[in-house]
Amino acid sequence: MDIMKLDKAIVYEGKSLIDGADIVAIISGMRGTSSNDKTGNMAQVTIIRSDMHPWEAITQGLDSSICGSCPMRRTWNESKQKYERICYVNPIYGPSAQYKAYASDKYVRISPSTASQILKRRGIGVRGGTYGDPAILPFEFWDDLLKHAPYHTMYTHQWKEKAFFDNRIFKYAMASIDHINTVEELREMHGAVRHYRVAQHYNEIAQDEVKCPSKNNSGDRVVTCSQCKLCSGSAKTAKSIVIVEND
Image (cartoon, rainbow, N blue to C red; front, side, top):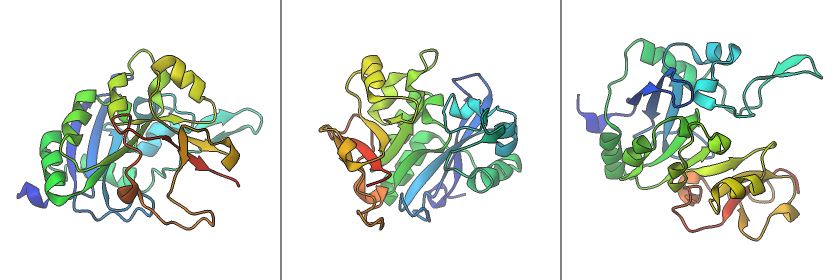
């Protein structure tokens, strides 16, 4: 097989840094064929457990192997007496199809360095952690995968986890600020690293932050991640990014 023609491949098989579970990282869209409206044509790295279907992992609470303590995971809502999951990734589609293809041994295996060279030649960037948190993979993996890639975007929720979190990942990843964490906590733990967070109104944007340019004030998509390239960790000298929910 001519690896320079690859569109999908396995780039990592090993153990989760969180709990030692078997996981796999699959890269797709290496030909720039992504149909993702927000990211544009970027290669996508999906991280899943290699020993069970993604939905099975979610319903058993075993998706913590790839998502850690992310508050977007499926959790029990005591007041509503039901499970809720607010993650925007639907595992029934991409992750499910990739797990089935992996289980059927339909992917070739290449090194992250080889994938990086392919992306360089094609001028295609990488979205790290389309599903699964990138911090559960060794920093060296990301260093090899991204060293030649033209650009990338990446986010991690795991920055409060002292047991396994490697803060070198901030070279490439933005710290994700969700509804139960704050910028102040991030700075206290890791200093002046860049972050990505959700705000309710424009007047909540601080001086060291800028609104995500993805959509205009009317809600129309005007810039893709592949065009913007701002969400690329603290190696880039730029303001942190904020998505505004309400005006």
